[in-house]
Structures are given as structure tokens and as C-alpha cells.
Amino acid sequence: MDNLSSSHLPNFPENSEVPVALPAEHASGGAVIDPRASNHADDTPADSLSTGNDNAGHDRSCVTSIYARRGWQLLDVRELYAYRDLFRFLVKREIKVRYAQSAIGVGWAILQPLFTMLIFTVIFGRLANVPSNGVPYALFSFAGLVPWMYFSNSVTDGVNSLIANSAMLSKVYFPRLLLPLSAVAARFIDFLVASVVMLGMMACYRFAPNWGVLVLPWLLVLMALTASAIALWLSTLAIQFRDVKHALGFVVQILMYTAPVVYPASLIPERYQLWYALNPMVGVIEGLRSALLGTCDMPWMFLFVGTFSCLLLASSGTFYFTRNQRSFADVA
Image (cartoon, rainbow, N blue to C red):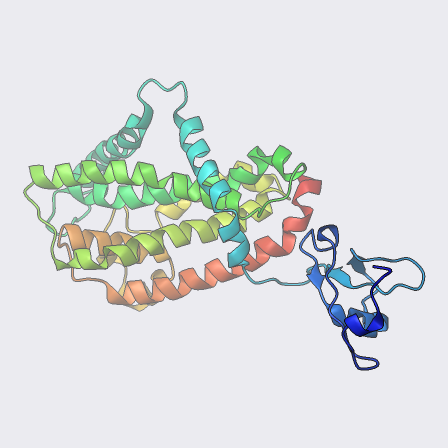
């Protein structure tokens, strides 16, 4: 290097910006490298973390800025996608823990709606003579119990998810939204098992689905999104007020009678049906009965109103959850 003359060196204009190759350790940690940072050192935020050289007479050339989130935050889809492996793990864990050391395993997904259907058939079908729109009451009630059991169990598991995993909340960071969502997703296995039983009953009674099955994806998404929305609202409240956990069973039981599980929606007076349709599960249950049993025409009004109500619940529940999640580790 000492033998090199100035003629061998490139001529740069005076005060020009020369690109500098930084060592690897300066570019690690996700820092943003900006060669022009030396000319704007005074514009660097005070709360920035610098990974450059802070010695006297040297300007910082590699800066990472960290800002705290404040106020109502939108759903960070990219962050949820980045933790998709954790979400799959939580769903598998929920399924394994539920049926660990169980004698009949997923058989509980069959027995729970089946025995409930038998009780409803005796009480409401035989004693109370509740109409079933020309369909055997056993089949009519089971078609309503399958989506309702999914909804009620998903909400119960989702509400308890934060309290049951309180140790995780204080030890490691991950999107807290994954806990209630994984509980809701894990219950879909029970829904599929009960749906197979439903198809078997339809074959025994010689009922065939109609063109309404094309609407089934809409109905399933609406059902899962409604359960997730209620779970987000109540789980946020439950981790702060434990009264919510104790009252949950009672509330879910009351909510069942606000949906057409044991009776058809046609019994509701027409002047109240618009308000009745604000419950998204009304459109889900009536839509499934229409598609599978043909009990009525596809309830488009119930579906459109219920979808609007569900989106409102889901968006507000997500905002409320993300607003309060920073305090979960302190109160869990």
C-alpha cells in the first residue's frame, strides 16, 4: 500500500458521497443501512438504536428506529403469517390435550349433540309439539345443534385460552391473538365429526342436499368468524374480570334460545325478524337447514344482516383485543 502513488487512486470530486462497505457486524440485526446518514446525523430520532460507530468524530451510518404502538391498532396480518407455525402447533396441542387420556376420544363430538338431540326430541318434539317445518324433529334439532355446539364450545375454549396460558404471556412474545383463534380452529374437528353423523342421519331419513350446498362455504366462514369475534371480546374481558369466566356457561345457555336451535325462525313475528337476524348464528342455522333438509328457502335476509353484524363484531373485537393485550401479562 505504501508503494501506491496517487495516480493509481480514482479521482473523486470534492465533497462527493463515496459508498462505504460496512463490516458484516454493522449490518446485522435488521438495521437499515443508509450511506447518507453521515450528512443527516442531526435528523436522527432521539429514541433510535444505533448499530454504527458512535466514537467521537465519526457519524453513525447504520440506524434502527423503534417506535411504540399506541392507540387502536389494525390487525397485523404479516405478523400473524410470520407466526403461522406457532398457530399450527397451538391447534394441534388443543386437540391432543382435549382428548388425552380419554376413553372414547373424538367420540365426545358425537355423544354431546346426539344425547342433546334425544332430550330435545322428547321435550320439544313430543311434549311441546314444536313445529319442525315438515322434517322429523330429531333431524331438525340435530341440524341446529351441530353448528351451535361448535359455536358454544369454541367461545368457551377461546375465552379460557388466555387464562389457561397465562404463563406463556409473561415469558415470551408472540401475537396474543393466536391463543383464542387456535382454540376456535381446533373445535372445527368436532364439527366435521358431527357433520358426518348428520349425513348419516340424512341417509337414514332419505333426505338429500339441494343446490343450497353452494352457500356452505359462506355459512362455515360466517360461523367460525362469529365464534372468533365473541371469543375475542369475552377473552379480553375475562382476563381482567374473572366473573366473565364464571358466568360464561350461563350466558351461552341463554344464547342458545336466541337462535333457532329448538324451533324454526318462522315462529318469530315478522316485525321482529330484522332484529332477530342481528344474531349471525340465525342465518347460519337456518341456512344449513335450508341447504341440507330443504325446510325453507335460503334465508338471504338473515345471511346478509348476520354477515354485517358479524363483521362489526369481528372488527371491534379485534381492535379491543389489540388495545388491551399489552396488559395481559400483568393481570393474568
